[in-house]
Length: 145
Image (cartoon, rainbow, N blue to C red; front, side):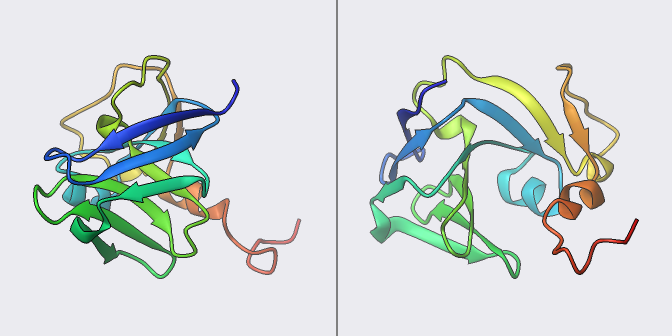
């Protein structure tokens, strides 16, 4: 799929996000932090660094880990994105986009943190928290063999 520029916004419209997306694959995070922040599993579309945020006077940033932070609207409370601290990678809320007509749910992460009282019907790739985090371990941290 060619890169496509799509727009997202918060509930009140005070924050607008333009993002260049290479795909409209939606991933779901079931970790405790995402569920508390988003009020349920966080459904997001991956974006690189080609993200433009307008309405930054209303943008709140919460440092949620040593490597990432979460953006939200301070007026309406909408959970908008997770991004790496260097802003090289964004995961933008799929629910904030105006037009995700080609969206496909493809992946679920932190499935070992998901409560047992809900399940998604789609067939997706699934990863535990440890499996997901292992992707980012440095070469020194990976076991030999």
